[in-house]
Image (cartoon, rainbow, N blue to C red; front, side):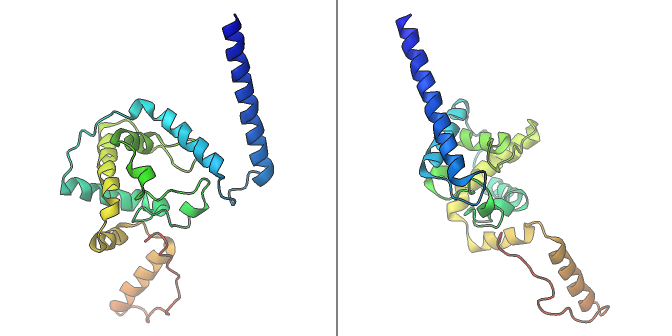
Length: 207
């Protein structure tokens, strides 16, 4: 009974400490996403993610690395992921830098040192309380795309200028960019006068 009393006391103390820390963080920054996460918040989130991914750590990538696999991952990343993560994985996009917590630089050790299974789980299942959604639907096709993405994420530190140009062509276009392309095409066909320079603003922060 004494051992259980000690355990209960430790758990209660931990709960109170966590509650007090949360209250302090809310008083410091409220619920605003503008302030940067404190070192304590970042450490706590990192440790929580480690615990959550424990069951996926040893899962092996069933897709063998190959140029065509990296190419497939590149295309999928450019179309689905770059708006937050940027083509080069730096996270330096308007969306990525306004999320809380900020989108990480995937080229750095904190991402690259995750196992393939951990990366796969993050892609498929998302990360609660962040901007990372669950992309997987548990289908075989979805899982194949996620494993391809794992190989591409490993390739991010070695991305070439040619690959970045290819990704720019694959990035989703906003309405202004589509309109600009239509205006240019109509002009080349002689249907409309030349579009005014700067008439449409092209936001290249995801490029």
